[in-house]
Amino acid sequence: PKEDAELIADMKALKDWSTKLDKAYSVKSIEVQSYDIFSNSEGANTAGFLKFKAQVTDPSDKSKTPTVIPSIVFMRGQAAAVLFLLKCDVTGELYTFLVNQARFPTGMYHFHDLPAGMVRKDGEIGGDVFEEIKTALGLKKEFNISDLQDLTRLAFDKDNRVLSRGYQGIFPSCGGCDEFLRFYCFRKTMKKDTLNELKAKFDLAMREAGKPTELRVISVHDLWRSADMKALIAICLYENLLATRKLPDWVKSQGQVYADREKLILRDRLGKLVCDSGVVVGLRGDIPGPTLNKPWGIAISLGGNAYIADSGNDRVVTLSMRNDLIMTFGGDDASKRLGNTQLKSPRGILIRDGHSFLVADSGNDRVAAVCLDNGNLMFEINHGLRNPHGVALDGQNNIVVTDTGNNRILIFAEKDNQVDLEPLVSFGRAGTGPLEFDRPTGVAVDLFGRILVCDSGNHRIQVISIKRQYLNEGTNTELKFDKYITSDIKVEVIIGGSRGKGMYQFDEPHGVAFDSENQIHVADTKNGRIMTYTPDGKFITGRRGPSSGVLRQPTPTEALLLQNREIDPRWIAPSGAMLPARFVSSVGTMAGKGELKDVEPQWKPQVYGIAIDYDDRMIMTDQGGNCAIVI
Image (tube, rainbow, N blue to C red; front, top):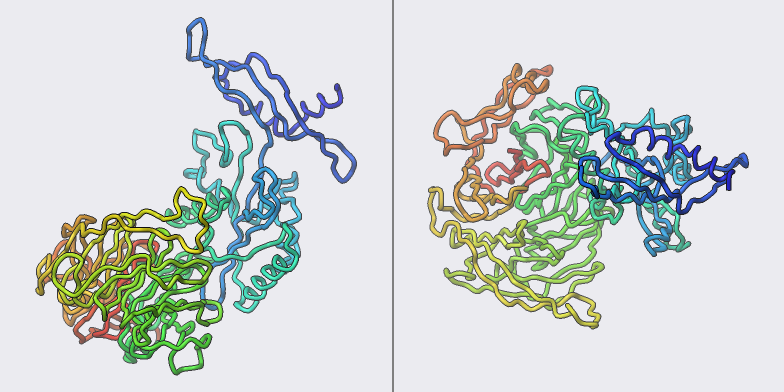
């Protein structure tokens, strides 16, 4: 009909697309195949969801039958997606909104995706979900793109000029749809109680109503697991813009620079470290801060907080990198204790997801899963364990445990906070050969799925691969837990094997970790150093802990330069170093009225735990100084 044809010709999406169409295309004709007519609140009609087929040939093909370019288009136009980041004022952890709604094209009644809507002419983002978010956050004005961080512009602009490619946004399906998304970011710091109320409110609403179009508040930890493309793009843009420092004024308004008491530290907008200078956390009492006693394992959350197994105090402590005690799990001090979980000599620890951590509760002969929100025990593994020291997760979220007292490695399946007490895999015995152990302690599973085990008594690291075949693969059998049989367990690499201080020697290593390049980092405990190797076991570098007369804290002038990012925030030991090496600086304190002074620690380092944060920086626990040190 003529009226519909006029509405189609007046479509903003079609006009914008026609204006920006590359002149290189040779378009012979356009055939409209389908469209929809919508009415707005004022009764005016508009056309949308246009599908057409064009006859387009490749102009570079000069043959008699030039190449036909695929040219079926589903036209929708521009949309906007917003990444809401809600920062807890106590823990520094980040949360975000997802929308649980019916998405008929997916066939799913419940689908969780990032809030998105159309941008109106006045710049406001339309959609009922934004009204709900505005109410939840206690905001009075509508969301306007002028008030948000435009992540897309920051990604595509260079020196405030749009790149020659002329991208307007992110195209999720460029092979058949013109739709492009611009991504924005909104950030707000909220009180912990308010955040918990929001999470509880929306969780309860969804459980009771069982209907879509309900908000969810989730940890940013979990966003990358979303099936929504918008969520994955948003977190990718945000983290890379942080890494390349392209978020204007974000450091001033959200990040902070601390030259505070005993340390100098820079933190970025995700709460992560952006400085490689030495930071000592929780020194015995010589420096203000929480008191640690035989710290063992350590894990770093996405928000940048350190979770330390404070073994001598029978607890796990959560510390900010400002050395502030956030909370404790277990222990005798009830002032900051969360929940009722009791621990005894905890060893290895890891952040299981955004909601819980796993800890090798060695004195209780178990592995405990503890809820981060309330501190209560979620489940435990105690089947036949004796003094377990290490815990890790493999690629299938199975739980890997070093059963230290029994000189073996166990792997357990977990699903919905229930554990199959019959191990999927059990291997190892006392001895010095491959797959034999003498007090296995630290454990990690690398990017290749290999199990890295600190074979402490044998002064070595065993890198073990497992080939597995799931019993319910290719069958219709529904098992509560995924069962598999192992066709081959073998040692791929052995690093070390004798006590000493050489490049391939250790003295009772207790911690192991890997970085984004799958390099292996070993906490060489009694030698007080970190040793780094390639995935196939070749030596790269060695790093020592603090020792008197070797390392130093930045001077006040250097600290100011470091704050302004005018010098490289790394200091190399002047002598006695195993090169190439970067070493942790010793600790500095504030003296008098804001004046830095140098302090040389006088302990012999004993490195037990090691963690790699999301910027590939190392944090180690040192029982010689009862502290954790950022390298």
